Image (cartoon, rainbow, N blue to C red):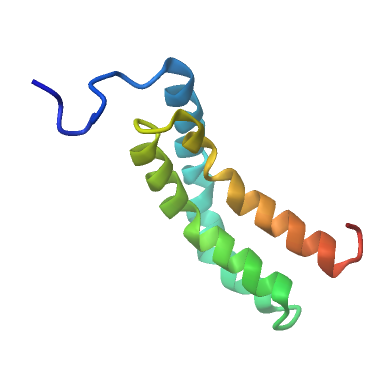
Length: 98
């Protein structure tokens, strides 16, 4: 009988569990960052401020999604990287560094 959480009947690879563990460990400092993320608007209401606050607040959602989808497609464990990539790209574009 197949486990309800695992559609393919296979256990996730060890490296995906390790990467997911890393993202989960990063949730601890996220709690402090989420509480202070509103201070991102102290410098003004810019695209960078909105993007950084949105990326910070949606980080746990991407970690949860990565944890669920890693059983279907192992590479999706890197989904939380999108939060960091989006913040970096918006900052680079805003400061003409791209």
